[in-house]
Length: 138
Image 1 (spheres, rainbow, N blue to C red):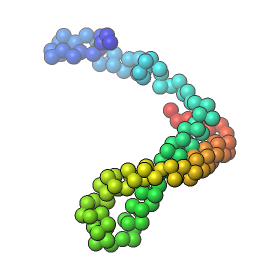
Image 2: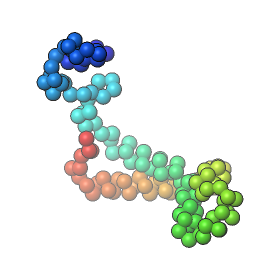
Image 3: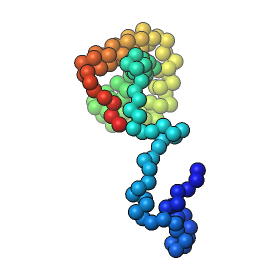
Image 4: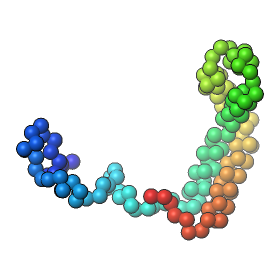
C-alpha cells in the first residue's frame, strides 16, 4: 500500500507532508479487496433461511448440555454441584465431559436436530415475510 501524503510516520514533525486539514478530506475507507462498506449487499432469502436452519440443527446436540447447566445453576446447591462435577467448575465439566458425550450421541438426536433446523428456518421465513421493506443494517 502506498501511504498518502498527509500521513507522516517520520520522527520529525517538520518533515511531514500535508496538513491536518488533509486528514478530514481523505477518501472513505474501503474494506478488504476493495469492497465498499456502503454496498448494502444481502444474500437471498433462501440462503439466509438455510443458514439459520443449518446452524440451529448443528447446535442441537448442545441444547441438553445448556439445559442441564441452567438447571444446575438455578436449583442445585453448591454442594450438589461439587458432587456432580467432582470438584471441577461447571464450565470445565461441561466442556470436557458433557459436550463430547453429547456429540457421541448426536445420531440419536438427528430427528430432533432436523426438526429444530426446519422449524428455525420456517420461523425465519415467517418473520422475514412479516417485515416487508426491512433493510439490512449498515
